[in-house]
Length: 553
Image (cartoon, rainbow, N blue to C red; front, side, top):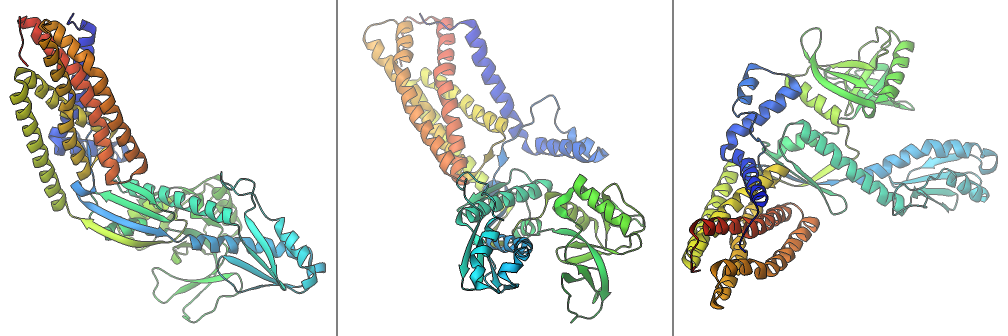
């Protein structure tokens, strides 16, 4: 018998109302967006009259989730960057040299004098005096090897040691090189994401491409140059003891010394100890502030390890200058006036408010592990995004109208029920997109347009099956019931295979392909729901009210 229990009807209409309620904020996009931005700013930085006014632009008891607009719809910047992992290999060799030197000095009686010689940046070459003790030297250095920290390199050593005449050749093993590449790329991805998130942009797309490349897409940012300035700065902060200062541009640094220029004093350089006391890697927080003179500055705070080293050094060196170095420039070199035990301090300089804010963001996000080379860059203006939205709207409306007319002309009243379900279906798609915080791109709009065409397939199968059942002289109620029962398997088979395709596209694809897969997959779910449950419920409600003796599909 054609009947749907009351509890099932409540659940169906409840899901429909919930989905449409989640989609509703997108009809008032600017207002809701202003409200969301104000709420986030109040939580992060405190309330102001302007923020309070903006937060009241949308009632707080209503849903406020929005479908985020992608780069091609909102405008923004696109960068394709390549990470120079060779720099990391060279740094590893530099860091390994003191350990190799100390280890070989312990067996100096056998190997004789040792001396590092020039070679490729990612190779460490050491000449030993006694070539006959090469086996001893190789074994001594091999004892410095550590296991590779990766799933694919488990059980292997991180360095390879070989002899070449009287030269000891040390390089990273292939497994360690691959693990280092993976770690460097993952660290770069995380730092870039932190920096972009700190800048307050919405839904950036930051993905690895190939072995050493990263694709960065940030909607809403002004230009590619602005994005490069934000993520391309390494922001390597270090604190060095000051040995002296000089105005001699041709001055040479002594052993384990470096000469760095002053950021504020033109023509002045500082001679510093090469090894820093603490580094930016031990920073836990940095915030823009103002110094005692009211000039923009940056507060910083170290982790326990950094705080201990910072405190110990200031205790032992009261009255000595201490250089704060950012990206190989001395920001300032204040004299230590007192012991600083808390692990916090302030960076002062000739900053503007914008520069101090950006510096705080960069320090908080951390230093990039390696330099990046930008291979491609594009800036997409908001006007182009507006044109894309308009074109997508026109395509959706045309497809929508054509399907509505076709269904009504083909199936009459039953087609009208299918059209109502189709309208609900579009609302549910946007409701789900808002719920999961998905990003809508131009290919995503294409997925919605395709969904509009596919959404009626299930209804067509049901209605054609009902026609067949009516020819067997069954009553209208039984014909409708059998139509849904016998069409169900075909509906599920067709949509499951398409959903699997969407899942594969989402898993293996990137960028625009994923945007298409998301809207296609969600559209399949909502289409099946509206066709099997919503359209059927509309038919049952109409049938119970009219009780027709015959029906015509």
